[in-house]
Every structure is written in C-alpha cells, then in structure tokens.
Length: 484
Ligand SMILES: Cc1cc2nc3c(=O)[nH]c(=O)nc-3n(C[C@H](O)[C@H](O)[C@H](O)COP(=O)(O)OP(=O)(O)OC[C@H]3O[C@@H](n4cnc5c(N)ncnc54)[C@H](O)[C@@H]3O)c2cc1C
Image (spheres, rainbow, N blue to C red):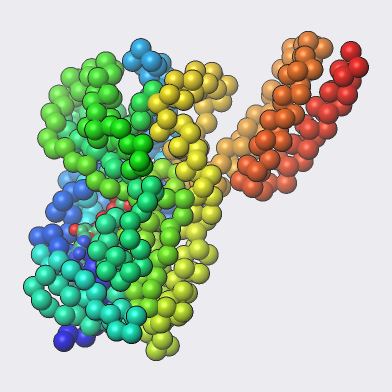
C-alpha cells in the first residue's frame, strides 16, 4: 500500500490550498481529483473580495492573466418592486486599493475579482504541484480506510489503497469522505440549492454597461446575484432545502429573467444563455464537527461557507491552510487521534474564519427574514427605498474582513453623520417633539428592549452609551407624557 503523510481528497480551492500548504511544510502529499482536471465542472463563478489580497496575494497577483478575469471595484444592488419596475440602483463603496496589491491599511471597499472556476481551480492546483504535492486527476476516492475508529487512508474507484497519517477531506458539499468516516450524514435544513445560468455576451458592451461591478437583484422574489466576467456573466439564486421547498429551481431564475430591466440589459450586451446548472451550497449558522481521528474536513465538506452571503472560496482556502498546518503539527507529535485533531477546530475558531461564524445564527436569520422571504420583501423594499434616501449603506455586500467589523464600521459611519443630523434635528425636528404621542414613545422603548440581544453584535462602548442615553431620554419623555 502506498504511504503518504497527507492524502487530500478534492482539488477544488480548499483541497488544492491544503495540498499546497502541506507540501510547503515538507509533508509528503498527494491530492486526488475526480474530474479530468481541477475546475473541469466550472461549478460556480467566483467573486473574490478584498480580504483575498491580505490572505492569498500569490493567487490574486496571477488572476489578471487568466481569460475570464474581470476586476471588481463595487457591488451594484438593483431593487425591483412588485410591478417588476426597477426602483433603485445602489452602488456600494468603491475600491480603496491601488489596483495592484492590498494596501494593508484599509480593510474597507470592494477590491476584488471575478473569475471562472475553470481558471481559478487549475491555478491553485498548479501552485500546490509547484510546492511539491502530487496531483492525481480522474481519480475518484470512494471511501476511507478505518482502523480502530481512526481514518488511516482512502480507497479509490480503481481499487488503489492510499495510506495516510492524515486525510484532508475537501470533496465539496456532498463529502463522501465525511459520510464514509461517520463524521456526519446530511446537512438537515442547512444546505441551499443554487440554480445558475451562464451567459456569453459581448465584452465591450459588458464593459460599457457593468464596468468593474458585480450586480445583485433584490425584489419580491428570492434575490439573485449576477457575477460579471470578462465576456460572460452568471445569474444565480438560491434557497434552503427545507421541507417547505415549493419551487422548481429554474423558476427562481425565470422570475428574475422576466424583469424588463434585466431583459434590456441582456439585449444591450447581446447575452446568449450557454449553460444551466444547479449545485448544493451548505449555508449554515456554524460548521458542525470538522474533524475525526486521522481526518479533517475543509471548505464545503466542513460546512464553512460564509453565513451571511454564502461566499465559500476564501473559507475553503483558509480552512485548507489551517487543516494542513494542523496536520504538520499533529504528525510531528506522532499523535493524529481525534483528541489531537480537535486542535484544528481550536485553530479555525481562533482565526478570521471563526470570527466569521461567531455570529452565524444572527447572519442566517437576517437572510432568512429578508431576501429569502419574498412576501416580506414586498414590505422591505419600501423600507429599503426610504432608507436609501437617508444613508446608502451596505453591510451585506462589503466584502471586507469580517462582516461583524463591517457592521461596526457602518454604524460608526452613521455616528459620524449624527452631528450633521443633530444640527438639522435641533432646528427642525426638536420643535416637533411635543407632537410625539405617548404610544409612539412606549413603542420605541419596547423595541429598544426587544433588540437588546442584537447588542451582542455591537460591542462598541460608544454605541452602548448612546443607546442607554436614548433609553434614559425616552424614559424621561415617557414619564413627562404619562400624566397628560
Ligand atoms: C452556484 C454557486 C455560486 C457560487 N459563487 C461563489 C462566489 O461567487 N464566491 C465564493 O466565494 N463562493 C461562491 N460559491 C461557493 C463556493 O463555490 C464553494 O464554497 C467552494 O467551491 C468550496 O470549495 P471546496 O474546495 O470546499 O469544494 P468544491 O469547490 O466543491 O471542490 C470539491 C472538489 O472535489 C472534487 N471531488 C468531490 N468528490 C470527490 C471524490 N470523492 N474524489 C475525488 N475528488 C472529488 C470535485 O470534483 C471538486 O473539484 C458558490 C457556490 C455555488 C454553488
């Protein structure tokens, strides 16, 4: 039987990055890909955000050379009302980057890239091979070899048996490896199905219309993203696979394709639908168990995609890197037991990956109660339209690291705006105080209480101080009006 330090199953972004890191750390590493080559399926378009420059500059630096590359400086949100009319086009903050590298000082903005997986996956796999890992293409791993409850290697479809000190399962959402080792079975209601159409179009016309932007379509439907590449784009939507699923996946996209503004866009850029796909994407509040004796799960196999916006490629590469580093640490100590590999979970939880998931429930709930609820969206659109006139902020589509920090930056920004508003308020709004009814004041107080758990998201002392002051003022006001 062949013997390896590390066998990685899957040469998607997570597997290849794990193989690259393991090889760089001097481990004898092989990675297996069932496709003819990495990225063969071109399963998702990849929008890569700002933090890629910080964490994976060696990949970002190479992207502009690839055929499908489009630089991304902003996200444009298009809000459509019940009559299918385009009501709002909202661009988020532009790039803070100088266009060639991560500035290191500013973590805001949209300095990213769109790239086909058919371009990205081979690039990362090549880096792993250059680092010394062996890639075996057209090799399907069918199960793990277990000894005394510990994973000791994998078996392939061809009947090969590869022994490993550590197996890194990077075999995507379905993860045969995780199931074969008994780490988990199904995802329950935490997995989404993502239908997507790939369109070819005219490059110059796409340049003229979208420039360096990704688009999102929001309305009384499931929400849709539009990832724009050099001379093509993807339109995709998604929904959790729960018992109340009542839609044919393609219907989610049809709804968006009927929007007159989208049809007009397609006409202008000469769009031609090329391929329809529907893939699984785990979209969980937090990853379930990610390790077993002799094995670690990375990327989609581990349930790592971002709980706020479902992006998962950065998460795959990060978890791949941490898993390989943990493998090197465990092998050097001669202990790859389940107890030892619990170190993997400790490490990813302490990293930006862990921060991303520390508010997973809150993030998933936001999504569940907005974009994925078409009925609620009918009412929310009105609110969004009104809010956009006050402050065009976007928490969801700032790809900075991490979303909780972004949320705090946005709220701080709101506080920066407050002095301006207070001038206006003192002069024009204050005189109206007398008109506020006790019922409204009571309701405001109640709502402040209802929202108390959300304070966990906002550890900033200034905010807490402001909120307690607001409560005090409202309380005084309530007392003042109670006797009337
Ligand atoms: C439609 C869609 C759009 C998306 N858009 C974005 C986006 O814009 N930005 C973003 O960051 N994320 C996006 N995601 C999420 C992202 O695609 C995933 O989170 C990411 O691909 C996870 O990487 P991975 O390496 O863990 O798994 P995968 O990319 O699924 O790679 C798994 C690899 O393992 C191989 N494999 C599987 N089983 C075996 C086996 N038994 N033996 C050998 N090989 C095997 C597969 O062929 C594949 O190459 C999108 C997802 C979908 C479905």
